[in-house]
Amino acid sequence: MEARLRIESSGFEARDVREIDLSIVVPLYNEEDNLAPLYRELKSVLDGYGHSYEIIFVNDGSTDGSSAVLETLHRDDESVTVIEFRRNFGKARALSAGFSEARGNIVITLDADLQDNPVEIPRFVERIREGFDLVSGWKYERKDPLSKTLPSRLFNSVVARTTGLPLHDFNCGFKAYSRSLVDNLNIYGELHRYIPALAFGDGFRVAELPVDHRPRLHGKSKYGWERFTRGMLDLLTVLFLTRYMKKPLHFFGSLGLVFMLFGLAINTYLAVIWFMGESIGRRPLLNLGVLLMVLGVQFISTGLIGEMLTHSHKGDECSPVARKLSRSDERGA
Ligand code: UDP
Ligand code: MG
Image 1: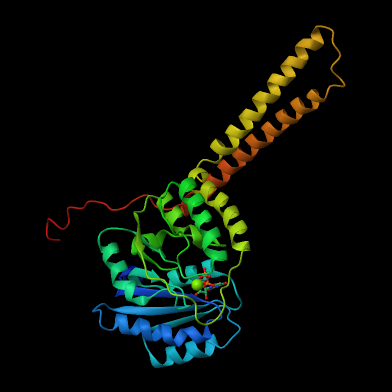
Image 2: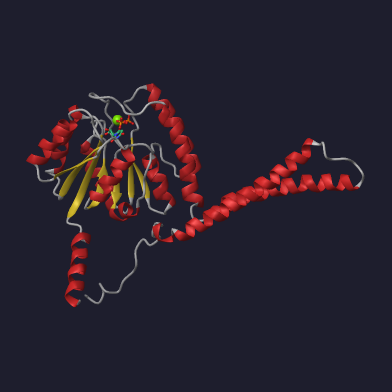
């Protein structure tokens, strides 16, 4: 028993000790012509940088020759890890898979389309070392068509205003993460656009770094106009998750109470005039009053069910602990 316990705990330590300084995570979908040049650029920055590193390519179900290129890179270079998805699951899932694989103390993500320039990596690392948990790239001179930059600007200003995090560019694929943030991230769907907002909501320190942005030379952009309608819907999710995740009744309950109060006021008024002898059976206002009260009850019940869910998922939440002051160092232990 004793021995077994020890094995388990040493196994845990082996997994927990970070042996690598930097993990570079690259999500990709149909980028065959960009991969080899990107790899060369990454190597030329990382090899002279003096930090241990790994490069993780996450192939999000590419249907072109990306797989073959990645196989070659992986065969010839030990620092290259390749994760292949069965089909296209989207960038958020690709990032998630990369985060789970990453062992580095700092994790850096960048797009595979050569629009992000790897020479910026040391600047990202520097800012994380200053104590930030998330450093988010800002394509201040964006090399994309107007059909993309214009809606994007609108999107960013709406998100900045609603989430209270004043970033210029939420959607930049170039970002650096501290280990503690990576351990606490939970993204899915298309929520990768909101990682800064979600992290900020959980109290992590977020900074922005202006980065060089280059035009796309090979391959096609994977997103069109539809990203913005979806993006706005996702914004609702994020607002809800960051503000009300732990107290759904505050959201649904206050809505429900407002409805109830209006319904009650209307019905009280109708009851009073009914007592005074007026007939109210054919008044549309009666429908409205009843409707509002029923809706109110429904909203409040939804809030209560939300509270139950929150309670049964207590273990899933992000840990609020940033660090714990300890005396062990002072004692020399
Ligand atoms: N990408 C992905 N899965 C997808 C769509 C995109 O992994 O379903 C990758 C893509 O290969 C690229 C990055 O995400 O490395 C950003 O995509 P893209 O350049 O098309 O977006 P844009 O720069 O136009 O915002
Ligand atoms: Mg791009």
